[in-house]
Length: 172
Image 1 (cartoon, rainbow, N blue to C red):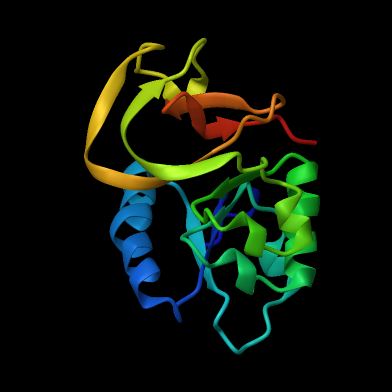
Image 2: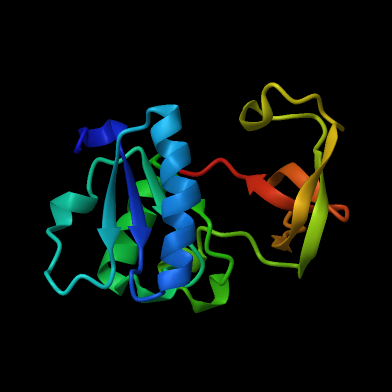
């Protein structure tokens, strides 16, 4: 369903079957639960996508590890321009170094990678962590791969091992 500038564009790569499956089981279920309007663009699709398909989105999402490197440069430039104009950008692809340069410019520098299981809501809190007291912690059922940043212009929302694993920055 296309809802103009109120929708999210979720980018996936169906050639990476395991990662795509995780996006279907986790990301899409979450988006449906939240009632967010979204469309999916498969970078493996051989049909050319019209530039208008990428325009007027509220949010652009790299839906899983490995999808960023397959985004064509022209589409990466279009996404980066939209984010600089105020659209949101969310990456579930931790392989930032593989992305086109225009997308890399949207991400913080990765300071470290590790497997983490214990997470903590960062101080002073953020609207993304509303409902969780700053400093509150939880333990995941199993360790997951984490990347963290130490960039000072990024605000930590969730931390693991003292590093920002979920971080936000004002764009534009």
